[in-house]
Length: 141
Image (cartoon, rainbow, N blue to C red):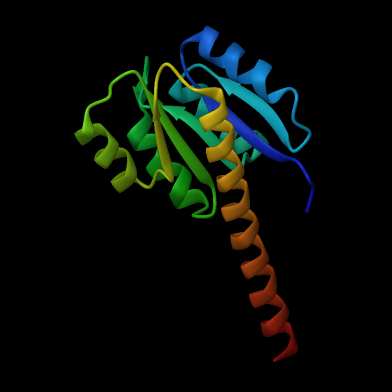
């Protein structure tokens, strides 16, 4: 497996994208991709196959909660971190029930985001290793 994990940031606020991009540019273990709309996110998902998403709930052309369901249907191992300006507890529950792995409110604390991304990378790696092991066991049978 490639040592870098593709992370797609989906947020219509360009400053949020730039801020996350600048912060993660210092880390060798991630490749950052960006989308501003629901439609761009779906296109990137199909073309680039990211394994992690930092996804705003409110997008100009769609709902991030709907998108997280599509992401998880496509690959349950994909990690989704939801972000939003709203700190409503019901939104947190909605995001987690939709399949998000974690949730952050804006303004983003980059150190906390990095910690959450690191945990998500580890979860994805464990999932990947488990699938690989299951395939090896099936091949021996």
